[in-house]
Image 1 (spheres, one colour):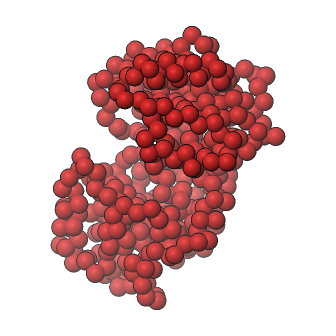
Image 2 (cartoon, one colour; image 1 turned 90 degrees about the vertical axis):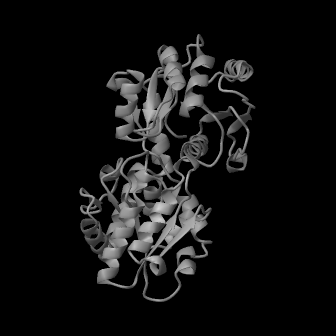
Image 3 (cartoon, helix red, strand yellow; image 1 turned 60 degrees about the vertical axis):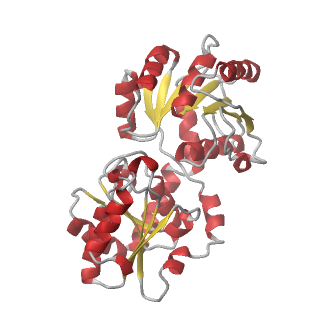
Length: 374
């Protein structure tokens, strides 16, 4: 099977990481994959080096760049894919327009369940809706959002959870410098981490109140927070730090900002705490599950469908309830870590994700195409 992914660029991000992971896995299974990045700025081409994935970098300079659109259309006609799959708004729009009249099935994507769609984007989606065969969301909330946004029936909106490469994660963690222990050194400490940008929907004040409750029972708890403050949420960090000071937590919590060793930080922690209100797919939960770190979270996104042990997801947003869940799950770390690993291998390992994607493609492509791994 020949699959062409179209995406705005290959910068660091969740959608970009999934395109890279799926591309490499599909090639390993004997399929041909191309990635057309509309912009080469900050491209992570090195992540696909040696994988046999054919990467094309273009140079989009404006929202609708007709030159890029013409080049993508020529590329599509020359490359002759069996299916085109766009990621994020630009990838969706350009894939639809470029494939118009080619009879090649075109799929779009939905990566969150609540983002604000600008008027220009809404118009773009509406004008090109008849050119899309379906939408692939990465959460069930995202699928509901996509059905409303694109006015599509349920049978044309599918869910494919994000995946992780367990082998690659294992190799990376084997070289870990144990960053959580560097931030909070010392024996006998219980280290918890929270990984999310500093914006209101991630509710860092709740995480701090949970830490306060834990410390009231056991002074060995520590919290490392990784994530920066997005420009459009200026002032959120100051509010979070004010809450830290009000709760007298300065010695027990570290705000580490943006880090490139987030996976290692999670793996070096006992618990990953998620306090988000809403948003996209919880990639950090997958990374924790792959690292052997217990996840405890609020009822957010698809966490209730993902976390395999009762009590890992807390229905209320009361700090007492979350703190009790952290203590309970920390005491059952070995059992929960094993259950998390088994769930990953069944539903979110790279090979499982690629197989699920191929089954989804079968709805839209010729029944004679080979979909199974060689």
